[in-house]
Length: 147
Image (cartoon, rainbow, N blue to C red; front, side, top):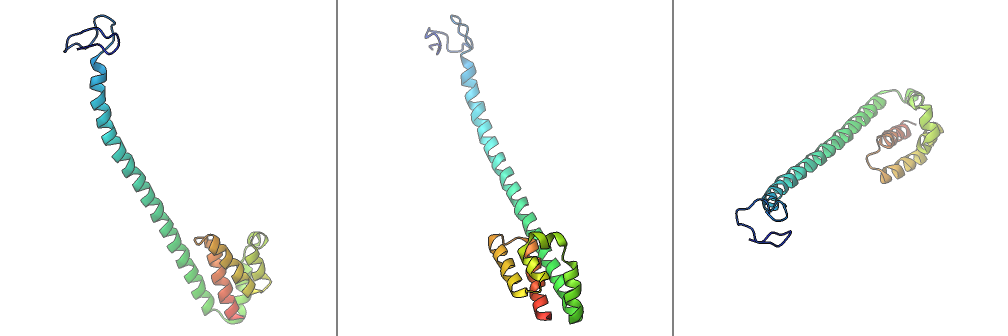
């Protein structure tokens, strides 16, 4: 067998070259180990990434379901209230920071419910999972009907 470093003849069973002192068999032993590591590491990483994606998707579904349930509960409560109280109490619940930041909520406080619905629908087209826009849209629809 020939040494891969100094090209001198060495024994077939040699681990270290007697001429240059380099380890010859180390590379030979390292290759199967690396191949085994790659065969183990890549599937484990793939499973880890798949699991993290599954958890993220599950959390997003749970958040969406919670927002939908909250919207349905608010709509049911608003429908049970007398029409005169609905407008005043619902508008009193709108937080001032939302009115300043969100044009849809600004339209709600001005009792322009059709325009508010348009603003909330535009926001939902950009981000279908926006819970603030979903609540605002449900609120504006109920308030428009109660008016």
